[in-house]
Amino acid sequence: MRADVTDANPPAKGSPLDYAMDQQSRLTLPAVRLAVEKGNGLLAFQPVVQAQRTDRPAFYEGLIRIMDDSGRMVPLRDFMPVAETTELGRQIDCLSLSLGMKALAEDPSLRLSVNMSARSIGYPEWMGILRNGVAEDPQAAERLILEITESSAMGLPDEVKTFMREVQRYGISLALDDFGAGYTSFRYLRDFCFDMIKIDGQFIREISTHPDNQVLTQALMSIAQHFDMFTVAEMVETADDASFLISNGIDCLQGYYFGAPTIAPPWKTPPSIALR
Image (cartoon, rainbow, N blue to C red; front, side, top):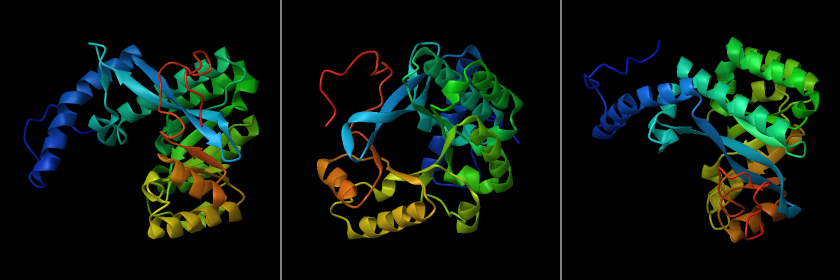
């Protein structure tokens, strides 16, 4: 059931921070809903590089950004945790996919990943955008990667497995996002056919100096490699962390060390400073 954002009564329980966050989402959601209805969104592109060739992106992740009527970019943290479980979350996924398909159509050399929730699998509009996009440009499907968060995938395992069979026939790749952040059922992971696993950034930050993160990341990499899935380290922010990950067999890396998300497509406007 969708939360009523007009209810002015504070929650009966929770910390002052919970209350402040709840109030912020109540103020933000109407503006976000209006912006999405108008199509006021764009993608910010962040490079993902191969470990053995870090000087050029293997693909880009397209991160959705929502603009309100004033032209301000609304921070995702202000609305996404609440929107995710409502129809607004599905509409945001539709906007993100539409923008992604458009970017792929405009540049035949681009490979792009787009985020989605497993909840969108049963949303007719989202599926319509995907199927129509593939029908209009079958080659775009081979350059599209759909990123599904671990928490949503594990919540709807049967739906995800059926969905996988359809989209992989088109040539679309699938990535399990935020791997390790939730409570993965390894039984489901065995049955899934993800092409790529993105290891959650909480295990990657300062990995070069944190033995616990090293052990946990190596365990997650070992699981992924056993199932023949590419591994991507998220939130790589320093040269030392990148070096450690590369020397320990990571396939791809993503993070501010290699490039921040930008709304100016990097392949159209080459950066003034080359990637490391």
